[in-house]
Length: 499
Image 1 (cartoon, helix red, strand yellow):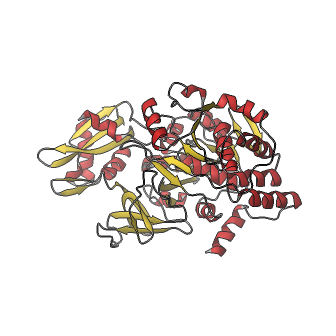
Image 2 (cartoon, helix red, strand yellow):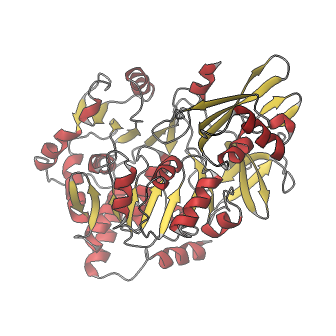
């Protein structure tokens, strides 16, 4: 395992010969900060000080500049302080997180789409001491000491240059769950103890040292955060925009080698005409519709990689272009160092092809929710909360285990119907969910975007012709759009308000 990790890191260019300055920066950074964000920027300042680290709406910052600026900013925080970040993608988010690392402060990544009441509740639940927020969120910021991001430049310029504590206590990194079924919970993310987690992703996604990476997914989300952390390990240049615009994202991609997206963003980029030559498009954050996968591979080439995971387990599997060309709906195979099991309700392995509960083991399983609860574990593996099956060594996700319904005594998986309907001509988006039914216990309802030439009967007949009769949605609604959170996940609880 150690040998495979090292070979993967060498192949990606993470481990390579260094000159005296680069070696000195790497060693000094490790002795000062351990393997953290702070170490990554000090290492970058030693190895490639003049390389662009961040390109955002405010300009360009080099690795040397980010290292110095975050040291100055760190003096504005206190050790063991808990800082909430309410920021869109850009330097303020990255510099605040890194400054927190340098002083040993906790960082709570706040969803920018939360309401004032939700933010106040999260701030109370997570015991936040201070907020760093973009000025646009001034009206929803909780009543706490606040630095607005347009004030950070002054804090950095006037920040002290005195030495920071060596090896400060590691601050906690807390990510909020997506909250698609209720109030977001705080999930404690572990700090990587080595570069093995990076090697796991690189074993299936062939990123290289020095790549230029556009991150369109929100940095406060687990996928955007993973892109940032992996990019730092690779000494990459990160291209960030405060708000997603498909045309701007594709224009940015002209100077990029890789792009990290969530599926709904990828779908919107497909609606434009520009097709930049990227080496990698990495997608995660929500289910990737097979039709979107197939079209991306056809129009951008064999460059699409799809990661399946969650805030709690980090990653479970990654699908390569070759695997998705063969099976557009697959979630791929586990990367290096990851274990996967499909089990029944008693925790016993199911046969290949049978649907069961997905459990995962890797080095980055979360440390539990901040309310003291956790995910179910089994023999060192953690539940993803999803159902799935294995076919020819590839994982297929059937949907959330709490979304499976029983209709007339039959188990029905909404995800199967969503995948089928998403392949219909004219359908751009679709969500299927279970709703109460007096006769059958539960029934399916489909919410369809697009499909102006289709009728509800067309939808039902298509499902009837391809799936079992109990999978046919009794209710079909044609809507202009699906409600989504900032990370692109469909908010099915809002669709249930129709009932």
